Amino acid sequence: MADKKLQFAIYWAASCGGCDVAILDVNEKILDIAAAADIRLWPVAMDFKYKDVEGWADGEIDVCLFNGAVRNSEQLHLARLLRRKCKVMVAFGACACFGGIPGLANLHDRKSIFEAVYGYTASTVNPEGTTPQPHLKVPEGELTLPVFFDDVYSLSQVIPVEYYVPGCPPTPDTIMTAVTAIVTGSLPPPGATVASDKSVCHDCKRKKSDKPTIKRFHRPFEIVPDPEQCLLEQGFTCMGSASRGGCGALCPAVNMPCRGCYGPMPGSLDPGADALAAMTSILAASDDATVAAETARLLDPLGTFYRFTLPVSVLGRAPKAS
Amino acid sequence: MSDRFEPVIAVLCCNWCTYAGADLAGTARMKYAPNVRLLRVMCSGRIDPAFVLRAFAEGADGVLIAGCHPGDCHYINGNLKTMRRFPQLKTMLAQFGIEPARVRLEWISASEGDVFVKVANEMTGQVRALGPLNWKVRAAVEPVSGLAEHHAG
Image (cartoon, rainbow over all chains, first blue to last red):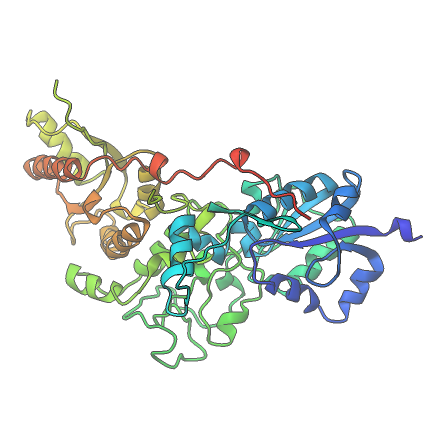
């Protein structure tokens, strides 16, 4: 009956590997997944060659869990290749869904990133100014490297995607919900996000007042949070109210403000605008000077409010220098 | 006609004060820069920061947010929410590379047609001095169809 098993592919692009580890975090249930499905491709865990993937028939694979953003020519090639080979494409994790942390590179471009990384960061030692070249002739032939793009793309900006499993990384519960839906054939309509349609606040057990106010913004290391009260009301930049739930509000439960890794709420116009409006409009201050002084304590609004979502935001990126 | 740059200024204004103030300027036949495009919402508190981002993304060179003076809000405190959002919005836009002088928050009452004229003219002048924002071109993302793949196995 081996040929009746579901055929899975798991691929990583511009990601940290955390999504792959998250799949292992389902613990013993990984055995159930292995019983229901053949994992045909999983670069982080198994040996394989891209030629093997190219040799598959189109549509031979049932489901691809694709994690990571797309920002170089190799990732683009694999995204397109896997799209052809797989019936169902799942954007797995915040980077594939929204661009994720690598998406913040959209504040720069390839040239300025290379100049920083190979030129002037504190830990760079590169007196000859060596930078990676896409082609190199050696006696044995020509070596090639993928080329970086100027922009970071979410997966659905590159290929059609059926489902979104958000999170940095997706929690084991979210993963099992998605995998169970796949295995039992009870998938939602294409385009769906496998998470809650309510905000993180809905799942958060902390005490919230009807009319919350913030007297002063704090960074997590500045004060010890009260374990009971809403973190936003205590002045932490908790993204919960502007972020999709489904994670079980794990971070606020351990005194860590939500960072918004499950992405914007359904129907959101812009993820960062939501968070900015939610956080600053409940300040207690009502005069220009105090408002300016208090909001100035909220450092790096762009990096905070678009931590995982810059490539899918309204402005999308900063202008390119060149 | 001169070749000078004519900026497009999106004015997001409230129904009760600023729109009425602009109306007063019109009925009093005061002249002001034709670069401003008024977009009326019921309250300046309704102005989602996403509206401002969208205006820039869709081609505005500047955005003016205008509402009732603090204390005069038709809905008691909607304009205070706008006031609290504005400094961070400005900081965030600067991080995106949009100059702070391209956005402005003003309180203009229904009787201040002259203030509306002054602000519209000033705003047009300060944005004209900055030049076109041209967001769609300057922050264009490379179309995926034009990107080359890397096939090495």
